[in-house]
Length: 68
Image (cartoon, rainbow, N blue to C red; front, side):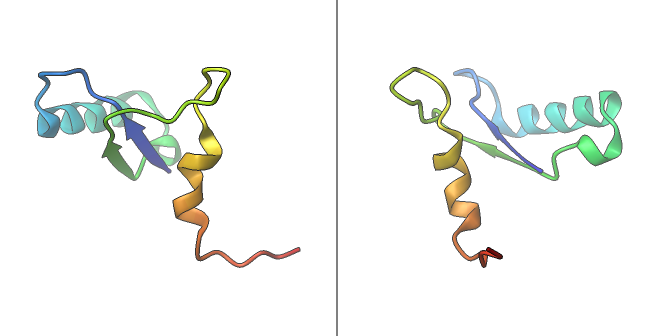
């Protein structure tokens, strides 16, 4: 699992990632803890204002082979 994070302005990025990892490990089951975190300026939105998940997932599926 990979987590995309939009930090609040003025927050130390390294400290934020360390705190997020620590918090997840303390409160989530091991298989639910993200293996990696990525900081973003913003998340893409659809015309309805929802987060556009397909556009976030697309770069990670480029080299995958379709089984259908």
